[in-house]
Length: 163
Image (cartoon, rainbow, N blue to C red; front, side, top):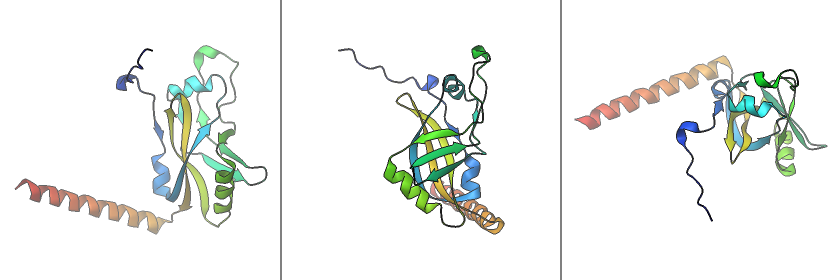
């Protein structure tokens, strides 16, 4: 049997991250789910013509379902006019017990499910979602101050190690 080729890092699939979500929300828990794409959306996502920054996820207990809203996928030009709508709701794939647990968590005030990262795994589109609690302005400022403080400490420690 032939050996599998090692993946070429230069031709690796793109990873789309929602860095703004970690700034606007305190992420308590993450979950990897599958993403249902139609037709030419796959090629558009592989070409990084996608935005998950405005997206959010809704979860319902009965029937158990996860739906991603406001993720926009750009047109794939060679396909012409036969393309699905770019900003339509998309189904997410997860186990029933995980969906029910997420639905119960977001019933609390201030909690929501946000997409954090879109990537490819074994040829399948995967989405990393997180249960987040919204941050206020003061929380955001405090987080920035803590990050800057840690960065200053690391700089000081690295300078000390050099001598």
